[in-house]
Length: 65
Image 1 (tube, rainbow, N blue to C red):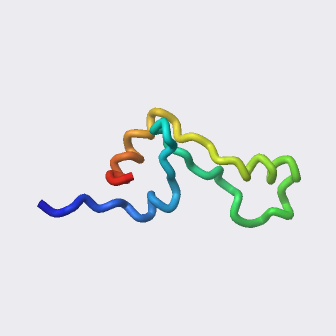
Image 2 (tube, helix red, strand yellow; image 1 turned 30 degrees about the horizontal axis):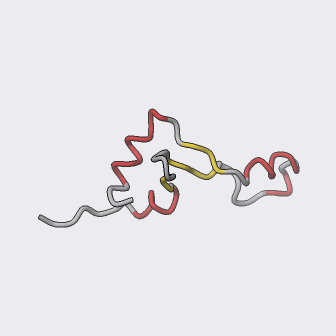
Image 3 (cartoon, rainbow, N blue to C red; image 1 turned 90 degrees about the vertical axis):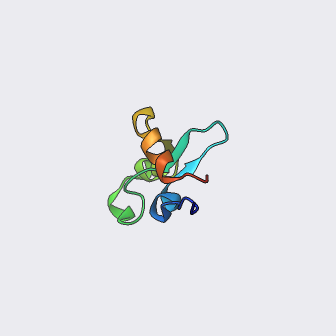
């Protein structure tokens, strides 16, 4: 039986916390910062948690993590 492969795109976007929840970066934080307010940029630094409805879908893509 071959090994299960991790979806590499998902492994770069999601991390699993110690308690098993899935963390994701906030959207819109990569470029175009001049047009965003300081408050908005500060909030984009934080990671968010994936909603429980999507957690199972993401964990299927990350079998070894």
